[in-house]
Image (cartoon, rainbow, N blue to C red; front, side, top):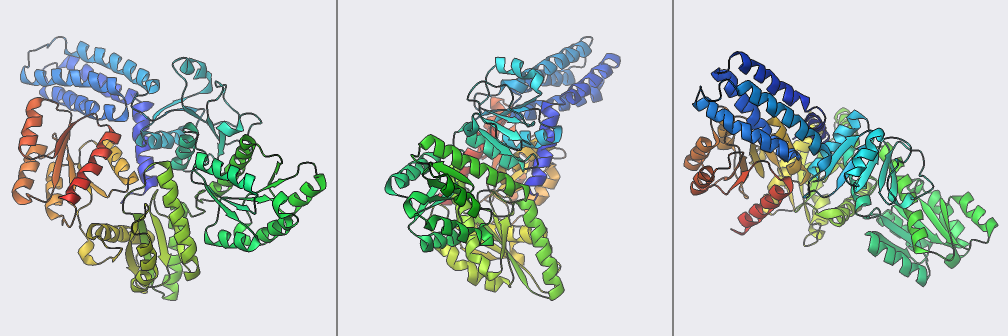
Length: 635
């Protein structure tokens, strides 16, 4: 299975081609127009033209270029007629294609900033480097946002057509934006003095998914969502204020009455920030801060102190023992929220720079892979057995709050397994990887109780485990892949934990994509992976038939997203073969640019689950897949 980083790079290239280098498409059509000028009746040229238009028609709209898709569809129909009638428009064919090239160029240009009224947010990239912008565009696209990349000199013109919900800026200074527009700054060393509650600093090398998540939080005014805060001995008014901020911002707020309770909280569930009410706990505040700073696990934990602002000597002492910021009494909610936001953002920057997930302090995927490879190499030298577990929720988390709850669950599990010598980190955007210094049987014994405790909870999860024997040579990527197969078996069988065996190889994934356009296939694959759905892609009819016939369906029946125009064997013929050879194993959904009533009725009468006309709305398609899976489980 491709990693999220690999999918990001693939989609970045594809989106960049559509959004920033549309001239490649128009150049191909111009070349075909030149050929038609010389040989207007050439069957090969007309067929090549139809195929290129078919590709643009089917894929451009799925990337948000709906007018481009419409124009291509119109000429595709005309090219089909030219195939049937060699004389039709013979002397005008080249001119017609050139006129389309001009119209497509204008449509591409207009669509770059037009957005889509179905999109969640309009994100504007200002002065962002080409490589960084490509990854951000791909990530924003699959999350359902409209996105456009410009240089600051074009800002005034772009703003004239509408104000974006959020801006991601590549420089170290704020662009000249209308008041209140939230900004993610890539590369700035400190927050501007004004409007800091609507500005976030992110390291320019941060993962694209993390940058877009920050932008989403800003656009939704939920910049603190999912963060956890522990307060030491706060008085009743301050406690009530913190709980109100937590409820409004989606934070997890806990209160410790004394130092013993504080350290119990820190060790059981490490927070993102600690608040000390020096007014309420007196001189014990300095001792508590000093004790926290003396524990290397909490050396970088942001500490915010609330105290009397008139006592300068006391404030100096608090800073000297390790406080990061100071909130004077009386406490104002807006000011306190701003200070919390600033400290969390600074912490986020430090962690991202080291490949650490800001919300959980767990390793991000690339660092996880390196860490696991190092551990596996060491185990191989020492002759020790190792087991790798993949932990995923049975149902992918929905929304910011659902994601925050899942991340919290991951952090708690990692903390509980740390005494076992486990290495933990994210292996993709959702899944937690756990490398345990023991064989699979022992790993099951360690994890089963935790999995059982999650049953019935919103974050209920199951586990797939793969062994690396003491004398084996399985690397981290292979072990993750096997553990993913085992996880799918556990989920489908309703088990808490499943240990990989050879019987798990070749099990059909949740979704099979049969699509010859790699741009659209990768876009669908990215969306499926981001929602925790396993998938496999085929680009040719015969290849898809062989692969589908070889799959073993166990439990949930896969959804097959099938194009009609496939090389070697068309989608309808492929469907007929499946109906004969595997009549009850697959649920086929046709995804095609052919929108005629006849094609749709043919598919549905033959037993297809649905018929979706391109361009594809990813959000609608993902919602439909969720419904189809639920219906299959109830059947």
